[in-house]
Length: 232
Image (cartoon, rainbow, N blue to C red; front, side, top):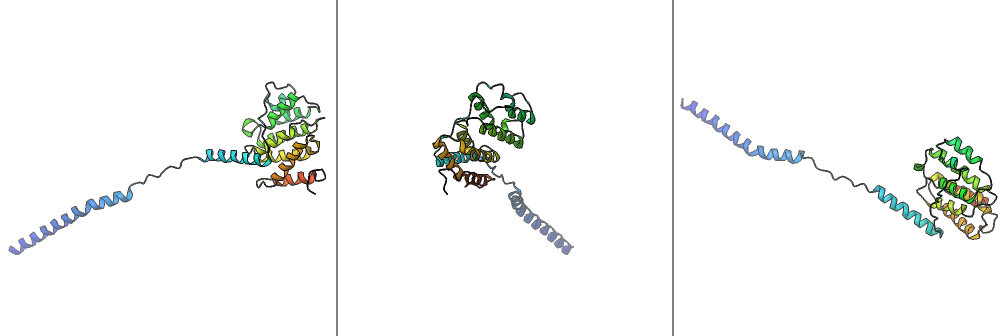
């Protein structure tokens, strides 16, 4: 009987020890689990890409204009859109072919007001027109050809093209077109200062690494290489 009591006490003692150990370690275990499983709040990235890209873009435009020694022209403004060019600008809501055909009907003696109104189309960004990028650039290309075939090349045609080339917010395809039309109209530029500026633009454009602009500039240089002012 005494031996049985000793065994009972031993069992009770073991139970007490076990409970004591469990009570001691359990809070620490819970703390450890909590510490491991606690979600770590991640800092959310601040979106500044848009602001930075605009800043870099503006700086690049300024640097390019400064390198060319060129003061960019203000955006073209025409209060009254002449009736003949209104369908070309899309004021009537026509599609590409209607606008293209309207452009083909324009003559070789456009008034200054008509020329300035067409500049508004040339300076239009992709977001400002209902046409797709391909169709809008095609229409603008046709309008540039109309300017080139005027009886007298508008004096501000080359500076307008240069302004749009310098403006990197224009899509790269249109900037390429600007160099192309500068090359094809160079012979008709009357002002020598504008010619000199255009030559600098050709050489500067050969440094472009995006798209086909550099190649287009090389073609412009080759096409006009026999004219005064170009390195032989």
